[in-house]
Length: 188
Image (cartoon, rainbow, N blue to C red; front, side, top):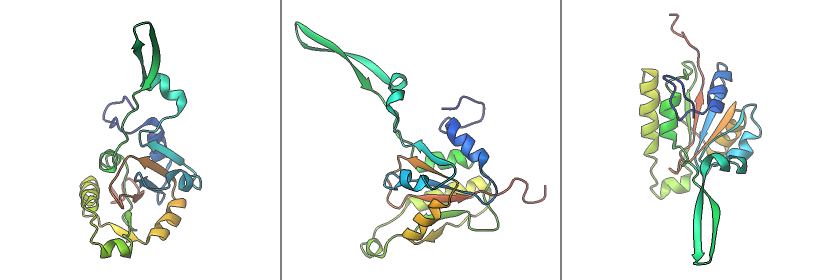
C-alpha cells in the first residue's frame, strides 16, 4: 500500500515504479486470475507485479496473527494464522491506474482477448468489457473503444509488454492490455 496524497492506495510502490518507468508505446497487461501471468511476465522487462493477494512466506509476519488453540484442557499451543489480503479486481485497479497513466491516441490503447468461437457459440458474455470501456473512457475524457485480438495473439503480445499485473479478477476473458501515451499530446 502506498501512503501518499492523491495516490490510490490500491497502487503498490512496485506498480507505481512500473507505471513511471514505462515509455510512450509501452504496454502493460492487467491479467485475470486464469491468465498465465508468471510465465508470460518472465518475458517482459518490468516483470510480474502481484496484485492478486498472493504473498511470499517472508510476508507472513506482516499479514499473520497468532491464534491460541486449546485442543484439550491440558494441551494448548499457538499457531500463526495467515490473514492475507484479498486480490484486487481489474476494475478497481483500472480506475486507479487511469488517474495516472495517459493512453496512446495514435494506436488502439485498450486491448482485450477475443472470446474463443466455441464460447461465443455457447452464448458466453463479457459484461466486464463494458465496465472497462466506461472506466477507460472516463479516465481519458474521450470515447475509447476496446480492440479485440485472438487469444494466442494476445498471449504473444503480452510477452512484448513492459510488465504484467496479476490480479484477483475472476471474470472470464477479463484480461486487458493498456498502451501508454504521452502527457501533453494535444500540444498544451
